[in-house]
Length: 192
Image (tube, rainbow, N blue to C red; front, top):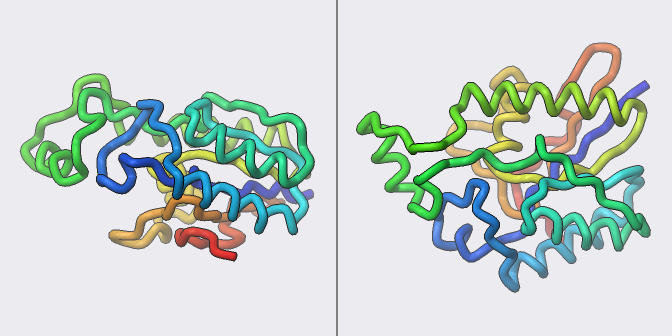
């Protein structure tokens, strides 16, 4: 029995445009983000999804609501494990500043480490399999979490060096008798 998980990144925010670290800061969708979420919902409404689940952050929940409405699903389940990686006191800074801090060996106060994120992602995969065995589930989450999850499932094959998951992008994974694997890898924003 296969379990299919679609990993949809939330729509665009102003901080995405400015290339700023959002982490767990609750930054709302901008107008483009709302449009992307509506477009993704329209595309996803042509498929069969049993459940829609979401990170607790509003940019993910609003994206999930568009999709659930298009699918005729009243309920969205919020999963804390889908939360974005915390970047601590670096949230709000530019990606360039973040890279410079890392290269200088300066860690962000209160940030979730890569190792901690990996443990959380493994817990998420275990929970998804336990709760949704045999189901098709759309999970709305965030770039760093999706990146880490795809890296684990693909044994480091994806994402490729320098590749980013676009806002409203959808990558699908499946669990069957052989374990987790990539079903459809697509880091680009969904288009109609």
